[in-house]
Image 1 (cartoon, helix red, strand yellow):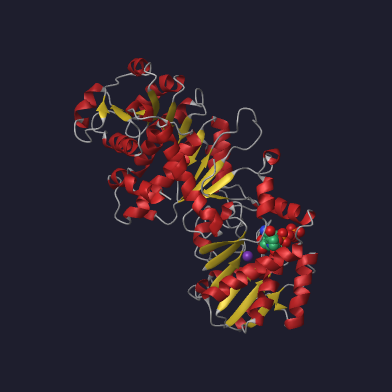
Image 2 (cartoon, protein in one colour):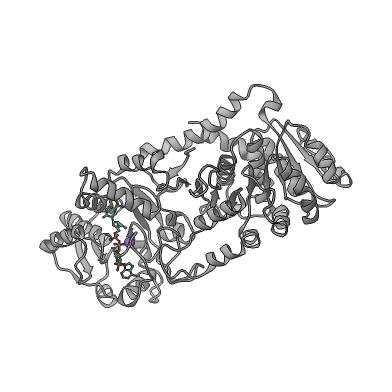
Length: 545
Ligand SMILES: NC(=O)C1=CN([C@@H]2O[C@H](COP(=O)(O)OP(=O)(O)OC[C@H]3O[C@@H](n4cnc5c(N)ncnc54)[C@H](OP(=O)(O)O)[C@@H]3O)[C@@H](O)[C@H]2O)[C@H](O)CC1
Ligand SMILES: [K+]
């Protein structure tokens, strides 16, 4: 499965870079020149009239990129000031530093020097993938100034271009090293970030999306080595990570494939399964006691809309009356207790279940054992997750999809949640991606941890228990209006519907998350959860290549 854009951890990026250089096909200096040229090109594209630029160069190769940028901008009539460090960087950056010194001086990288002359653009080339610890001393002061904590009302932010990432941001987690995980007024916010080859998890997680500004992914010619690194013999090194994020610019060749991949996967199931409604799957949504039916109905309606052939809502008999209204396509069947559910599940045509939305914790606790025993594909959401936290992992399997929000995740995996909330003091910091993957490994189920940076992780394959499972990040950072009551119930229903259609749990959860977001994008602010299911067909149509 690959839809969306591949993302690489910093370790994978470094490995691919070393492979490329070891092959003799490209040198470190060439890569640095291409990286610097990509950034200079983006600056000239956005600011066609040359002005004043201050380039801040750190101690390593990120700084090396900065010296290339300075040289290229100076050649095109920009007034360039370079602030750098008095150190001897690695050979590639050292060469680029020497090249710059033929064109201009290097002033000390201090806040006093930075403030001395105002610029139209500031280029942050201080730290990139090599950040290992929180910035301190003079560099921390420079970064604080760029972040706007100097009482300058954030004026620098609109003019800040960052190379690879805002310095101080851990590119594997999206957390700022040494700072609390919560947003802070002095976080470094860029207008534009240019990264190389592929996005990294930190661009999509936690503070990354807000602080990177617009993200451009520049091609620096590593494609062949990236592809080779994802071959089967390299499984241990590439952890199969995909991003679904409509906002970043990836090299054009990789974009259409993303949309087509999603559509093709949906259509393949539809066409491959024949014309009968049962061949498009039967999903069941277990509803709760009287007065709590709305959440389950939202889920059921969404399951119908994603193309499940049949959907049955199953409240206890006492609550049946409140499910009498539309949609008429929905079937109703009372399920009073665990025995009734076991009996019903004798029908092998029921392909997937959704339990949790409005179900009630006690009822979920009663119904979970027969549901899990049946081995059916299922979505466990809301009350079912609370029930699960008390029951443990027994019975979970790799056809289960758990869809916790942050609070439910901390009830299920308190130690992971605690580590995730802690201030990171070294890089790479534990990321939401790491935590979700670990949760999938422990539970043996697919885990979808909701948020503006939703992470979906599959457990390791049975034949490779020590390998890392595939994971997907779906960025919904641009649709804050999706955080509304009932939206999670719709998502659970979408995933159940896709599971009933026969999609694998990871694909159903990833595609479900994408469709949910795409539908919300099409509605806009003011959205309520009731709007979502009926707008799903429009989101599907947008996927048609
Ligand atoms: N992706 C690519 O193919 C290319 C990337 N390029 C650019 O290179 C950087 C990564 O360069 P690297 O030299 O590995 O790392 P940095 O420049 O980010 O950091 C430099 C060194 O700084 C030290 N360090 C780490 N944290 C701190 C800190 N808090 N304070 C002071 N110093 C710190 C660390 O060295 P230590 O030995 O001291 O730990 C770093 O090594 C990448 O981001 C791209 O911009 C290439 O130019 C092109 C190809
Ligand atoms: K940087």
